[in-house]
Length: 159
Picture 1: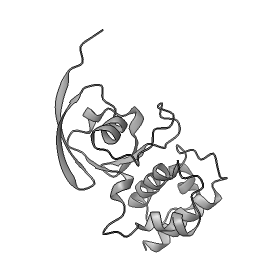
Picture 2: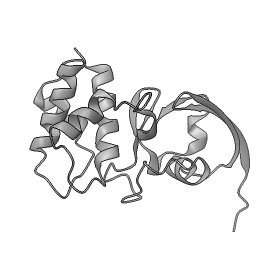
Picture 3: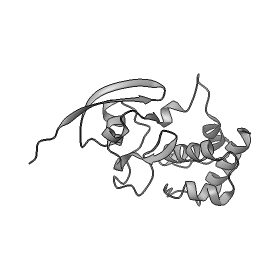
Picture 4: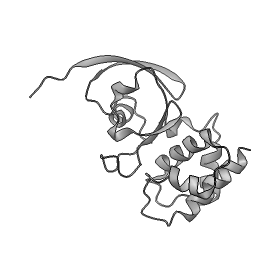
Protein backbone atom coordinates (compact mmCIF):
# COMPACT_ATOMS: atom_id res chain seq x y z
CA UNK A 1 0.00 0.00 0.00
CA UNK A 2 1.44 3.41 -0.97
CA UNK A 3 2.39 5.76 1.83
CA UNK A 4 0.13 8.80 2.21
CA UNK A 5 1.91 12.13 2.32
CA UNK A 6 0.84 15.11 4.36
CA UNK A 7 0.78 18.79 3.65
CA UNK A 8 -0.02 22.00 5.50
CA UNK A 9 -3.16 23.81 4.38
CA UNK A 10 -4.30 27.24 5.39
CA UNK A 11 -7.90 28.25 4.82
CA UNK A 12 -10.80 30.15 6.32
CA UNK A 13 -13.90 28.32 7.55
CA UNK A 14 -16.93 30.39 8.50
CA UNK A 15 -14.73 33.43 9.02
CA UNK A 16 -12.07 31.72 11.15
CA UNK A 17 -8.58 31.05 9.85
CA UNK A 18 -7.25 27.48 10.16
CA UNK A 19 -3.88 25.93 9.45
CA UNK A 20 -3.60 22.14 9.62
CA UNK A 21 -1.40 19.26 8.53
CA UNK A 22 -3.60 16.89 6.52
CA UNK A 23 -3.21 13.79 4.39
CA UNK A 24 -3.16 14.44 0.66
CA UNK A 25 -6.13 12.10 0.19
CA UNK A 26 -8.35 13.62 2.92
CA UNK A 27 -11.76 14.60 1.58
CA UNK A 28 -13.18 18.00 2.47
CA UNK A 29 -16.28 16.42 4.05
CA UNK A 30 -14.07 14.34 6.37
CA UNK A 31 -11.88 17.33 7.22
CA UNK A 32 -14.95 19.41 8.13
CA UNK A 33 -16.80 16.68 10.03
CA UNK A 34 -13.94 14.85 11.75
CA UNK A 35 -11.17 17.41 12.14
CA UNK A 36 -13.28 20.55 12.61
CA UNK A 37 -16.38 18.89 14.16
CA UNK A 38 -18.69 20.74 11.75
CA UNK A 39 -21.19 17.92 11.46
CA UNK A 40 -23.93 19.95 9.79
CA UNK A 41 -22.29 19.01 6.49
CA UNK A 42 -23.91 15.63 5.93
CA UNK A 43 -22.38 12.50 4.44
CA UNK A 44 -24.90 10.92 2.13
CA UNK A 45 -23.84 9.07 -0.97
CA UNK A 46 -20.04 9.56 -0.72
CA UNK A 47 -19.97 9.86 -4.50
CA UNK A 48 -21.13 13.37 -5.40
CA UNK A 49 -24.66 12.33 -6.29
CA UNK A 50 -26.93 13.55 -3.48
CA UNK A 51 -25.68 17.04 -2.51
CA UNK A 52 -26.10 16.54 1.25
CA UNK A 53 -22.47 17.61 1.74
CA UNK A 54 -22.71 20.87 -0.23
CA UNK A 55 -20.61 23.74 1.13
CA UNK A 56 -19.45 27.01 -0.38
CA UNK A 57 -15.83 27.29 -1.49
CA UNK A 58 -14.95 30.85 -2.45
CA UNK A 59 -18.68 31.53 -2.78
CA UNK A 60 -19.40 28.64 -5.14
CA UNK A 61 -21.36 25.50 -4.27
CA UNK A 62 -19.06 22.51 -3.96
CA UNK A 63 -19.79 18.86 -3.23
CA UNK A 64 -17.40 18.18 -0.35
CA UNK A 65 -17.46 14.36 -0.58
CA UNK A 66 -15.59 14.48 -3.89
CA UNK A 67 -13.36 17.48 -3.09
CA UNK A 68 -9.91 16.97 -1.66
CA UNK A 69 -9.32 19.19 1.35
CA UNK A 70 -5.84 19.99 0.02
CA UNK A 71 -7.43 21.58 -3.06
CA UNK A 72 -9.00 24.17 -0.76
CA UNK A 73 -5.68 25.62 0.41
CA UNK A 74 -6.10 29.39 0.55
CA UNK A 75 -9.86 29.22 0.09
CA UNK A 76 -12.79 30.68 2.01
CA UNK A 77 -15.21 27.93 3.03
CA UNK A 78 -18.71 28.37 4.40
CA UNK A 79 -20.73 25.58 6.00
CA UNK A 80 -24.24 25.48 7.38
CA UNK A 81 -22.84 26.26 10.84
CA UNK A 82 -21.66 29.64 9.60
CA UNK A 83 -24.99 30.76 8.20
CA UNK A 84 -26.65 32.01 11.38
CA UNK A 85 -25.12 35.21 12.76
CA UNK A 86 -25.43 36.37 16.37
CA UNK A 87 -28.07 33.74 17.04
CA UNK A 88 -30.22 34.84 14.09
CA UNK A 89 -31.02 32.58 11.18
CA UNK A 90 -29.80 33.66 7.75
CA UNK A 91 -32.43 34.74 5.22
CA UNK A 92 -32.22 31.33 3.52
CA UNK A 93 -32.51 29.41 6.79
CA UNK A 94 -35.45 31.56 7.89
CA UNK A 95 -37.21 31.09 4.55
CA UNK A 96 -36.78 27.30 4.71
CA UNK A 97 -38.27 27.36 8.21
CA UNK A 98 -41.17 29.70 7.42
CA UNK A 99 -42.10 28.10 4.10
CA UNK A 100 -41.70 24.48 5.22
CA UNK A 101 -38.76 23.76 2.91
CA UNK A 102 -37.61 20.93 5.16
CA UNK A 103 -39.07 17.54 5.90
CA UNK A 104 -36.80 15.05 7.65
CA UNK A 105 -33.99 17.62 7.50
CA UNK A 106 -31.16 15.42 6.24
CA UNK A 107 -30.82 17.20 2.90
CA UNK A 108 -31.54 20.65 4.33
CA UNK A 109 -27.97 21.82 5.06
CA UNK A 110 -26.90 20.98 1.51
CA UNK A 111 -30.02 22.58 0.03
CA UNK A 112 -29.49 25.74 2.05
CA UNK A 113 -25.84 25.98 1.04
CA UNK A 114 -26.68 25.43 -2.65
CA UNK A 115 -29.40 28.10 -2.38
CA UNK A 116 -26.96 30.46 -0.65
CA UNK A 117 -24.47 29.95 -3.48
CA UNK A 118 -27.17 30.74 -6.04
CA UNK A 119 -28.33 33.88 -4.24
CA UNK A 120 -24.77 35.18 -3.97
CA UNK A 121 -24.46 35.16 -7.76
CA UNK A 122 -28.08 35.86 -8.78
CA UNK A 123 -30.14 38.18 -6.61
CA UNK A 124 -33.46 37.44 -8.29
CA UNK A 125 -33.38 33.94 -9.78
CA UNK A 126 -36.39 32.53 -11.57
CA UNK A 127 -37.74 29.05 -10.85
CA UNK A 128 -35.64 27.47 -13.61
CA UNK A 129 -32.45 28.98 -12.15
CA UNK A 130 -33.44 27.72 -8.69
CA UNK A 131 -34.10 24.23 -10.04
CA UNK A 132 -30.76 24.23 -11.85
CA UNK A 133 -28.88 25.41 -8.74
CA UNK A 134 -30.52 22.70 -6.62
CA UNK A 135 -30.27 20.05 -9.34
CA UNK A 136 -27.44 18.23 -7.57
CA UNK A 137 -29.31 18.08 -4.26
CA UNK A 138 -31.70 15.22 -3.65
CA UNK A 139 -34.62 15.21 -1.24
CA UNK A 140 -36.53 11.98 -0.78
CA UNK A 141 -39.31 13.52 1.31
CA UNK A 142 -40.80 16.23 -0.92
CA UNK A 143 -41.66 17.15 -4.46
CA UNK A 144 -39.39 20.22 -4.16
CA UNK A 145 -42.32 22.68 -4.39
CA UNK A 146 -41.78 24.04 -0.87
CA UNK A 147 -38.01 24.04 -1.32
CA UNK A 148 -38.28 26.20 -4.45
CA UNK A 149 -40.81 28.43 -2.67
CA UNK A 150 -38.35 28.80 0.22
CA UNK A 151 -35.50 29.87 -2.08
CA UNK A 152 -37.77 32.32 -3.87
CA UNK A 153 -38.83 33.78 -0.48
CA UNK A 154 -35.20 34.10 0.61
CA UNK A 155 -34.39 35.96 -2.61
CA UNK A 156 -37.26 38.37 -1.95
CA UNK A 157 -36.16 38.89 1.66
CA UNK A 158 -32.64 39.77 0.53
CA UNK A 159 -33.83 42.45 -1.91
